[in-house]
Length: 217
Image (cartoon, rainbow, N blue to C red; front, side):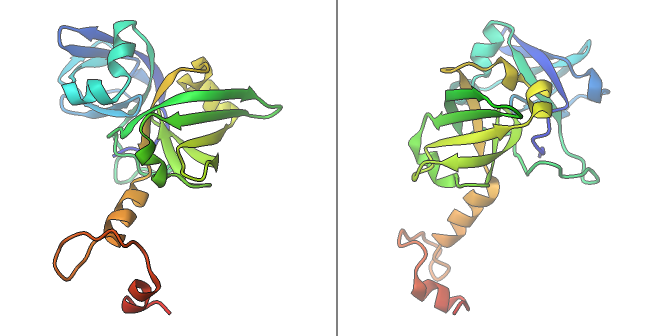
């Protein structure tokens, strides 16, 4: 589990069916088996190397994220070690399991911040987005400033510290980023569609009868 607070910017390179990640010195030392979020993707250190680690990457991860394309060109990546139970939760709970990618549709420089707009590559994930909700973009915990009615397109306000300390400053319109929706939204949806009487799911959603049956008036 992670918080979406990037601790360093490193580099990733493909190597014979695996990837090499450098740039972990700010949160070293690492141990074999440690988890590190790499652009929001939870990877396991299978071998330690100078200032980084080697990690095996599944076909599923390469298909669903940008890691493969970045590794092919030695791209910059955001890095965050796994959360300790004693750590402060400064961002939001991030699992490191990317839902889908998104496309940067607008990038505007404002007097005191940057406005970043993104469109989900898979529209079905838009239902997890609402104003002031959290979302992880390339592993960075950000707050949704505005969104379309279906949540498919949304905008984020990026402060100078986040801009300077992450790979966001390298983005351009048309670039692809990894997106992970807020886990709380996913669990809430699951619970609201569950029918406790027979263990099956229902598609009726939230109704006044359901609320009354569960103690809400």
